[in-house]
Length: 114
Image (cartoon, rainbow, N blue to C red; front, side, top):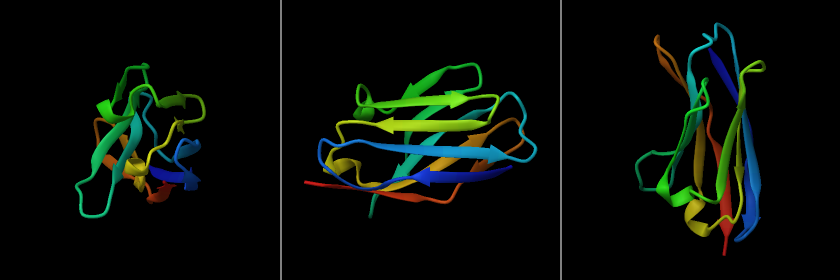
C-alpha cells in the first residue's frame, strides 16, 4: 500500500487547513486510516483515526476543532482542521493499518503562526 498525502502549509492562529491522503495498491476493505503528528523535540502522537466502518478516535487536544472523514470507495481520508493553534504546529503523517501491516505516508508540514 502506498500513501500520498497533500495539504498542509502556513496559516495564522484561528485559521483552517485541510489534509488529504490517498491509499493505493493492495488495500483491504477492513482498515484504519488517519493522522498522527510530530512536533520538534516531541514524540509522534495520534491526531485522529477512522476505521473503514466509521469508528473515529480523536486526540483530546483536537476534539471540537478537527474533523476526520473518509471515502471508502476512493480509499481516501481527510482531516479538516479549524481554529488552529500554534500548538498544532507539527509534521503530520498519514497512517494506514490493516491486519497485515502499518504504513506511513510522507509527512506534511503544518505551521500555525501566532
